[in-house]
Length: 183
Image (cartoon, rainbow, N blue to C red; front, top):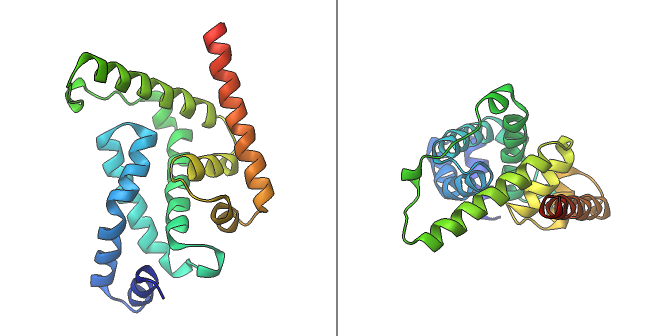
């Protein structure tokens, strides 16, 4: 039994210390996952807290037979991100990161950072138009770097379907980027 399994058993028995240990272990990883998709420190902090609270509230439903704990946690995080990007709040309040949040080492670094941010925003704009299941597959693979096997297990669908949806999404993104470059 791994450490997460031990903590889960202890949490289900009422241990607050185990809950604190589990949250402390996964906090930075979940924050990084969310930040890659929001590009906002403040929003990422808020969403990470919401995700971890949701995880603790639903931990009794975690079933190790359906996949690894990490994948289950990322599934919760992905669902929260999908909800956020589909919310009216997102539609009306696009996140703008103040220039102070970036450490400007050189003009080249700033240009790369700005280009990266634009690419991520363009990718997110494309995937946010998709159904929730396809978004989950893409986010779990691209941002969480989960294996196709773990994603298939967590979402309870054939691995071949997961791969097909993911690669179709990659082609869609590439096509969109090409059209923007030439159009």
